[in-house]
Length: 387
Image (cartoon, rainbow, N blue to C red):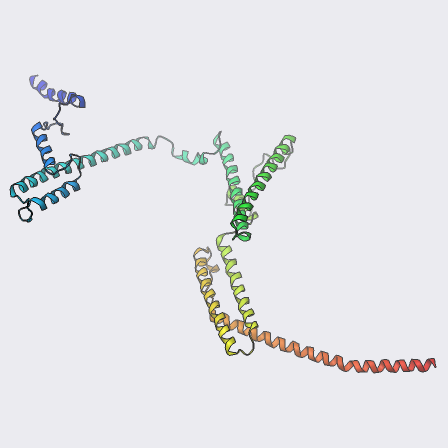
Protein backbone atom coordinates (compact mmCIF):
# COMPACT_ATOMS: atom_id res chain seq x y z
CA UNK A 1 0.00 0.00 0.00
CA UNK A 2 2.83 2.38 0.87
CA UNK A 3 4.60 1.59 -2.39
CA UNK A 4 1.45 2.34 -4.37
CA UNK A 5 1.07 5.74 -2.70
CA UNK A 6 4.73 6.55 -3.36
CA UNK A 7 4.34 5.72 -7.02
CA UNK A 8 1.19 7.83 -7.44
CA UNK A 9 2.57 10.89 -5.63
CA UNK A 10 4.93 12.05 -8.46
CA UNK A 11 2.13 11.66 -10.99
CA UNK A 12 -0.25 13.80 -8.94
CA UNK A 13 2.50 16.37 -8.40
CA UNK A 14 3.19 16.51 -12.15
CA UNK A 15 -0.52 17.04 -12.97
CA UNK A 16 -0.62 20.00 -10.57
CA UNK A 17 2.59 21.48 -11.96
CA UNK A 18 1.37 21.19 -15.55
CA UNK A 19 -0.43 24.51 -15.15
CA UNK A 20 1.96 27.31 -16.16
CA UNK A 21 0.94 29.40 -13.16
CA UNK A 22 2.07 26.66 -10.74
CA UNK A 23 5.54 26.02 -12.26
CA UNK A 24 8.23 27.69 -10.11
CA UNK A 25 10.39 30.30 -11.85
CA UNK A 26 13.60 28.94 -13.37
CA UNK A 27 12.27 25.35 -13.55
CA UNK A 28 11.44 23.64 -16.88
CA UNK A 29 9.38 20.46 -17.35
CA UNK A 30 10.52 17.77 -19.79
CA UNK A 31 8.11 15.97 -22.11
CA UNK A 32 9.13 12.55 -20.76
CA UNK A 33 7.02 11.65 -17.68
CA UNK A 34 9.90 9.80 -16.08
CA UNK A 35 12.46 12.59 -16.45
CA UNK A 36 13.43 15.09 -13.79
CA UNK A 37 13.28 18.86 -13.82
CA UNK A 38 16.22 20.86 -15.15
CA UNK A 39 17.88 22.73 -12.36
CA UNK A 40 18.10 26.48 -12.18
CA UNK A 41 21.87 26.19 -12.34
CA UNK A 42 21.74 24.50 -15.77
CA UNK A 43 19.36 27.12 -17.17
CA UNK A 44 21.61 29.90 -15.90
CA UNK A 45 24.60 28.20 -17.49
CA UNK A 46 22.74 27.92 -20.80
CA UNK A 47 21.83 31.61 -20.66
CA UNK A 48 25.50 32.37 -20.02
CA UNK A 49 26.38 30.38 -23.17
CA UNK A 50 23.90 32.43 -25.18
CA UNK A 51 25.31 35.65 -23.76
CA UNK A 52 28.86 34.55 -24.60
CA UNK A 53 27.84 34.01 -28.27
CA UNK A 54 25.90 37.31 -28.32
CA UNK A 55 22.63 35.50 -29.17
CA UNK A 56 19.05 35.43 -27.95
CA UNK A 57 17.46 32.24 -26.65
CA UNK A 58 14.99 32.06 -29.56
CA UNK A 59 17.61 32.16 -32.33
CA UNK A 60 17.91 29.64 -35.15
CA UNK A 61 20.64 27.11 -35.89
CA UNK A 62 22.03 29.27 -38.70
CA UNK A 63 22.35 32.22 -36.32
CA UNK A 64 24.34 30.04 -33.88
CA UNK A 65 26.74 28.89 -36.57
CA UNK A 66 27.18 32.39 -37.96
CA UNK A 67 27.96 33.85 -34.55
CA UNK A 68 30.49 31.08 -33.79
CA UNK A 69 32.31 31.62 -37.11
CA UNK A 70 32.51 35.33 -36.43
CA UNK A 71 33.92 34.86 -32.91
CA UNK A 72 36.30 32.13 -34.08
CA UNK A 73 37.87 34.48 -36.60
CA UNK A 74 38.36 36.97 -33.75
CA UNK A 75 39.61 34.75 -30.88
CA UNK A 76 41.22 31.70 -32.55
CA UNK A 77 44.93 31.46 -31.75
CA UNK A 78 45.86 30.99 -35.41
CA UNK A 79 43.66 33.79 -36.72
CA UNK A 80 46.35 36.45 -36.40
CA UNK A 81 43.89 38.84 -34.74
CA UNK A 82 44.88 41.21 -31.95
CA UNK A 83 42.12 39.67 -29.73
CA UNK A 84 43.35 36.07 -30.23
CA UNK A 85 43.13 34.09 -26.96
CA UNK A 86 43.10 30.30 -26.61
CA UNK A 87 41.23 30.30 -23.26
CA UNK A 88 38.48 32.52 -24.60
CA UNK A 89 38.21 30.41 -27.77
CA UNK A 90 37.79 27.22 -25.68
CA UNK A 91 34.91 28.86 -23.77
CA UNK A 92 33.35 29.99 -27.05
CA UNK A 93 33.64 26.50 -28.53
CA UNK A 94 32.03 24.94 -25.44
CA UNK A 95 29.22 27.49 -25.56
CA UNK A 96 28.77 26.85 -29.29
CA UNK A 97 28.32 23.08 -28.78
CA UNK A 98 25.79 23.47 -25.98
CA UNK A 99 23.82 26.24 -27.66
CA UNK A 100 23.79 24.35 -30.98
CA UNK A 101 22.50 21.21 -29.28
CA UNK A 102 19.80 23.21 -27.50
CA UNK A 103 18.74 24.97 -30.72
CA UNK A 104 18.54 21.67 -32.60
CA UNK A 105 16.41 20.13 -29.85
CA UNK A 106 14.11 23.16 -29.87
CA UNK A 107 13.80 22.99 -33.67
CA UNK A 108 12.98 19.28 -33.57
CA UNK A 109 10.43 19.86 -30.83
CA UNK A 110 8.68 22.50 -32.95
CA UNK A 111 8.73 20.23 -35.98
CA UNK A 112 7.32 17.30 -33.98
CA UNK A 113 4.64 19.57 -32.58
CA UNK A 114 3.68 20.77 -36.07
CA UNK A 115 3.60 17.18 -37.34
CA UNK A 116 1.43 16.13 -34.39
CA UNK A 117 -0.94 19.02 -35.08
CA UNK A 118 -1.13 18.11 -38.77
CA UNK A 119 -1.71 14.46 -37.92
CA UNK A 120 -4.44 15.43 -35.47
CA UNK A 121 -6.08 17.62 -38.11
CA UNK A 122 -5.96 14.84 -40.70
CA UNK A 123 -7.39 12.44 -38.18
CA UNK A 124 -10.20 14.89 -37.46
CA UNK A 125 -10.92 15.23 -41.19
CA UNK A 126 -10.91 11.47 -41.66
CA UNK A 127 -13.26 11.17 -38.73
CA UNK A 128 -15.94 13.33 -40.38
CA UNK A 129 -15.08 12.60 -44.00
CA UNK A 130 -17.44 9.71 -44.62
CA UNK A 131 -20.34 10.80 -42.44
CA UNK A 132 -22.14 12.16 -45.53
CA UNK A 133 -23.36 9.70 -48.20
CA UNK A 134 -21.02 9.42 -51.18
CA UNK A 135 -23.66 10.39 -53.74
CA UNK A 136 -24.55 13.73 -52.18
CA UNK A 137 -22.04 15.72 -54.26
CA UNK A 138 -23.91 14.69 -57.41
CA UNK A 139 -27.02 16.51 -56.12
CA UNK A 140 -25.34 19.88 -55.47
CA UNK A 141 -26.24 21.37 -58.92
CA UNK A 142 -23.65 24.14 -58.30
CA UNK A 143 -25.86 25.52 -55.55
CA UNK A 144 -28.68 26.38 -57.98
CA UNK A 145 -32.36 25.94 -57.18
CA UNK A 146 -34.40 24.81 -54.23
CA UNK A 147 -36.92 22.11 -53.43
CA UNK A 148 -36.72 18.40 -54.09
CA UNK A 149 -33.81 16.91 -56.10
CA UNK A 150 -36.01 16.56 -59.20
CA UNK A 151 -37.14 20.20 -58.94
CA UNK A 152 -33.55 21.36 -58.48
CA UNK A 153 -32.51 19.31 -61.51
CA UNK A 154 -35.06 21.10 -63.71
CA UNK A 155 -33.96 24.48 -62.39
CA UNK A 156 -30.33 23.57 -62.98
CA UNK A 157 -31.09 22.61 -66.60
CA UNK A 158 -32.72 25.97 -67.18
CA UNK A 159 -29.75 27.68 -65.54
CA UNK A 160 -27.31 25.90 -67.88
CA UNK A 161 -29.39 26.82 -70.94
CA UNK A 162 -29.49 30.49 -69.90
CA UNK A 163 -25.75 30.50 -69.25
CA UNK A 164 -25.06 28.96 -72.67
CA UNK A 165 -27.25 31.59 -74.34
CA UNK A 166 -25.37 34.38 -72.57
CA UNK A 167 -22.03 32.93 -73.64
CA UNK A 168 -23.18 32.71 -77.27
CA UNK A 169 -24.35 36.33 -77.23
CA UNK A 170 -21.05 37.42 -75.73
CA UNK A 171 -19.16 35.48 -78.41
CA UNK A 172 -21.15 37.12 -81.22
CA UNK A 173 -20.66 40.57 -79.72
CA UNK A 174 -16.89 40.15 -79.46
CA UNK A 175 -16.77 38.76 -83.00
CA UNK A 176 -18.53 41.83 -84.38
CA UNK A 177 -16.26 44.15 -82.45
CA UNK A 178 -13.12 42.42 -83.73
CA UNK A 179 -14.47 42.51 -87.29
CA UNK A 180 -15.64 46.11 -87.59
CA UNK A 181 -13.88 48.04 -84.83
CA UNK A 182 -10.51 46.38 -84.45
CA UNK A 183 -8.45 49.62 -84.44
CA UNK A 184 -10.77 52.12 -82.75
CA UNK A 185 -10.96 52.09 -78.97
CA UNK A 186 -13.45 54.94 -78.66
CA UNK A 187 -15.89 53.54 -81.19
CA UNK A 188 -15.48 50.12 -79.61
CA UNK A 189 -16.46 51.45 -76.17
CA UNK A 190 -19.44 53.35 -77.61
CA UNK A 191 -20.63 50.27 -79.49
CA UNK A 192 -20.22 48.13 -76.42
CA UNK A 193 -22.33 50.46 -74.29
CA UNK A 194 -24.99 50.65 -76.99
CA UNK A 195 -24.97 46.87 -77.36
CA UNK A 196 -25.48 46.45 -73.63
CA UNK A 197 -28.38 48.91 -73.61
CA UNK A 198 -30.01 47.21 -76.61
CA UNK A 199 -29.53 43.77 -75.07
CA UNK A 200 -31.03 44.84 -71.78
CA UNK A 201 -33.96 46.49 -73.53
CA UNK A 202 -34.62 43.36 -75.62
CA UNK A 203 -34.41 41.15 -72.55
CA UNK A 204 -36.89 43.34 -70.67
CA UNK A 205 -39.25 43.39 -73.65
CA UNK A 206 -39.11 39.62 -74.09
CA UNK A 207 -39.63 39.06 -70.38
CA UNK A 208 -42.65 41.40 -70.36
CA UNK A 209 -44.17 39.61 -73.37
CA UNK A 210 -43.66 36.22 -71.73
CA UNK A 211 -45.26 37.36 -68.48
CA UNK A 212 -48.16 38.92 -70.38
CA UNK A 213 -48.72 35.72 -72.37
CA UNK A 214 -48.60 33.64 -69.20
CA UNK A 215 -51.17 35.92 -67.57
CA UNK A 216 -53.47 35.52 -70.60
CA UNK A 217 -53.11 31.74 -70.50
CA UNK A 218 -51.42 31.37 -73.89
CA UNK A 219 -49.09 28.71 -72.50
CA UNK A 220 -51.84 26.56 -71.00
CA UNK A 221 -52.83 24.69 -74.17
CA UNK A 222 -49.43 24.06 -75.74
CA UNK A 223 -48.99 20.83 -77.65
CA UNK A 224 -46.92 18.31 -75.75
CA UNK A 225 -47.47 19.92 -72.36
CA UNK A 226 -46.77 17.48 -69.55
CA UNK A 227 -45.37 14.87 -71.95
CA UNK A 228 -41.76 13.63 -71.94
CA UNK A 229 -39.31 14.98 -74.50
CA UNK A 230 -38.95 13.07 -77.74
CA UNK A 231 -35.79 11.11 -78.29
CA UNK A 232 -33.39 12.45 -80.86
CA UNK A 233 -33.09 10.05 -83.76
CA UNK A 234 -29.73 11.34 -84.94
CA UNK A 235 -27.96 11.15 -81.56
CA UNK A 236 -30.05 9.04 -79.20
CA UNK A 237 -27.04 8.32 -76.99
CA UNK A 238 -26.65 12.01 -76.01
CA UNK A 239 -28.68 13.36 -73.12
CA UNK A 240 -31.30 16.03 -73.99
CA UNK A 241 -29.49 18.82 -72.14
CA UNK A 242 -26.24 18.35 -74.12
CA UNK A 243 -28.20 18.12 -77.37
CA UNK A 244 -30.08 21.34 -76.65
CA UNK A 245 -26.88 23.18 -75.75
CA UNK A 246 -25.22 22.02 -78.98
CA UNK A 247 -28.28 23.08 -80.96
CA UNK A 248 -28.22 26.55 -79.34
CA UNK A 249 -24.55 26.96 -80.22
CA UNK A 250 -25.05 25.85 -83.83
CA UNK A 251 -28.14 28.03 -84.37
CA UNK A 252 -26.26 31.09 -83.14
CA UNK A 253 -23.33 30.62 -85.48
CA UNK A 254 -20.77 29.18 -83.08
CA UNK A 255 -17.92 27.35 -84.80
CA UNK A 256 -14.94 25.46 -83.35
CA UNK A 257 -11.54 27.09 -83.50
CA UNK A 258 -10.08 24.61 -85.99
CA UNK A 259 -12.89 25.30 -88.50
CA UNK A 260 -12.28 29.05 -88.28
CA UNK A 261 -8.56 28.47 -88.71
CA UNK A 262 -9.21 26.26 -91.75
CA UNK A 263 -11.23 29.02 -93.42
CA UNK A 264 -8.53 31.54 -92.54
CA UNK A 265 -5.83 29.41 -94.22
CA UNK A 266 -7.95 28.94 -97.34
CA UNK A 267 -8.74 32.65 -97.68
CA UNK A 268 -5.11 33.61 -97.05
CA UNK A 269 -3.64 31.39 -99.78
CA UNK A 270 -6.25 32.62 -102.28
CA UNK A 271 -5.43 36.25 -101.49
CA UNK A 272 -1.69 35.62 -101.81
CA UNK A 273 -2.12 33.91 -105.18
CA UNK A 274 -4.35 36.67 -106.49
CA UNK A 275 -1.96 39.40 -105.28
CA UNK A 276 1.00 37.65 -106.93
CA UNK A 277 -0.89 37.34 -110.24
CA UNK A 278 -1.88 41.02 -110.14
CA UNK A 279 1.73 42.03 -109.49
CA UNK A 280 2.86 39.96 -112.48
CA UNK A 281 0.24 41.53 -114.74
CA UNK A 282 1.47 45.01 -113.84
CA UNK A 283 4.95 44.16 -115.19
CA UNK A 284 5.80 43.94 -118.89
CA UNK A 285 6.30 40.90 -121.09
CA UNK A 286 9.15 40.14 -121.51
CA UNK A 287 10.61 41.57 -118.29
CA UNK A 288 13.17 44.32 -118.43
CA UNK A 289 16.13 44.35 -115.96
CA UNK A 290 14.32 46.82 -113.70
CA UNK A 291 11.11 44.80 -113.85
CA UNK A 292 13.06 41.62 -113.05
CA UNK A 293 14.33 43.21 -109.83
CA UNK A 294 10.77 44.25 -108.94
CA UNK A 295 9.52 40.73 -109.65
CA UNK A 296 12.30 39.27 -107.45
CA UNK A 297 11.22 41.53 -104.55
CA UNK A 298 7.59 40.48 -105.02
CA UNK A 299 8.63 36.82 -104.94
CA UNK A 300 10.62 37.36 -101.72
CA UNK A 301 7.62 38.92 -99.99
CA UNK A 302 5.45 36.07 -101.25
CA UNK A 303 7.87 33.48 -99.86
CA UNK A 304 7.87 35.22 -96.47
CA UNK A 305 4.06 35.20 -96.40
CA UNK A 306 4.05 31.51 -97.34
CA UNK A 307 6.47 30.82 -94.46
CA UNK A 308 4.10 32.51 -92.01
CA UNK A 309 1.16 30.60 -93.47
CA UNK A 310 3.00 27.29 -93.00
CA UNK A 311 3.47 28.15 -89.29
CA UNK A 312 -0.26 28.72 -89.08
CA UNK A 313 -0.78 25.30 -90.69
CA UNK A 314 1.37 23.75 -87.94
CA UNK A 315 -0.92 25.27 -85.31
CA UNK A 316 -3.95 24.02 -87.22
CA UNK A 317 -2.62 20.45 -87.37
CA UNK A 318 -2.16 20.43 -83.59
CA UNK A 319 -5.81 21.16 -82.80
CA UNK A 320 -7.71 19.54 -85.68
CA UNK A 321 -9.58 16.51 -84.26
CA UNK A 322 -9.71 14.54 -87.54
CA UNK A 323 -6.51 13.15 -88.98
CA UNK A 324 -7.74 13.32 -92.57
CA UNK A 325 -8.35 17.08 -92.23
CA UNK A 326 -4.72 17.91 -91.57
CA UNK A 327 -2.97 20.09 -94.15
CA UNK A 328 0.45 19.98 -95.80
CA UNK A 329 2.75 22.97 -96.23
CA UNK A 330 2.59 25.16 -99.32
CA UNK A 331 5.66 25.30 -101.58
CA UNK A 332 6.47 28.91 -102.51
CA UNK A 333 8.39 27.98 -105.66
CA UNK A 334 5.57 25.81 -106.98
CA UNK A 335 3.08 28.59 -106.30
CA UNK A 336 5.26 31.10 -108.20
CA UNK A 337 5.56 28.71 -111.18
CA UNK A 338 1.82 28.18 -111.08
CA UNK A 339 1.17 31.93 -111.20
CA UNK A 340 3.58 32.33 -114.13
CA UNK A 341 1.73 29.60 -116.03
CA UNK A 342 -1.56 31.33 -115.31
CA UNK A 343 -0.07 34.59 -116.60
CA UNK A 344 1.15 32.85 -119.80
CA UNK A 345 -2.35 31.42 -120.40
CA UNK A 346 -3.80 34.87 -119.79
CA UNK A 347 -1.44 36.43 -122.41
CA UNK A 348 -2.33 33.76 -124.98
CA UNK A 349 -6.05 34.22 -124.43
CA UNK A 350 -5.61 37.99 -124.75
CA UNK A 351 -3.76 37.64 -128.06
CA UNK A 352 -6.41 35.30 -129.46
CA UNK A 353 -9.15 37.73 -128.42
CA UNK A 354 -7.37 40.63 -130.11
CA UNK A 355 -6.94 38.64 -133.35
CA UNK A 356 -10.63 37.76 -133.39
CA UNK A 357 -11.61 41.37 -132.85
CA UNK A 358 -9.30 42.42 -135.74
CA UNK A 359 -10.87 39.89 -138.10
CA UNK A 360 -14.38 40.99 -137.17
CA UNK A 361 -13.55 44.67 -137.70
CA UNK A 362 -12.00 43.94 -141.11
CA UNK A 363 -15.07 41.94 -142.18
CA UNK A 364 -17.36 44.78 -141.17
CA UNK A 365 -15.27 47.28 -143.17
CA UNK A 366 -15.48 45.09 -146.32
CA UNK A 367 -19.24 44.85 -145.99
CA UNK A 368 -19.80 48.58 -145.60
CA UNK A 369 -18.92 49.67 -149.24
CA UNK A 370 -21.22 47.03 -150.63
CA UNK A 371 -24.09 48.33 -148.50
CA UNK A 372 -23.39 51.88 -149.60
CA UNK A 373 -23.27 50.89 -153.29
CA UNK A 374 -26.56 48.99 -153.08
CA UNK A 375 -28.24 51.93 -151.37
CA UNK A 376 -27.10 54.35 -154.10
CA UNK A 377 -28.32 52.02 -156.83
CA UNK A 378 -31.72 51.81 -155.13
CA UNK A 379 -31.93 55.61 -154.93
CA UNK A 380 -31.14 55.96 -158.68
CA UNK A 381 -33.77 53.36 -159.52
CA UNK A 382 -36.34 55.21 -157.39
CA UNK A 383 -35.57 58.49 -159.20
CA UNK A 384 -35.93 56.75 -162.58
CA UNK A 385 -39.32 55.33 -161.57
CA UNK A 386 -40.57 58.78 -160.46
CA UNK A 387 -39.50 60.33 -163.73
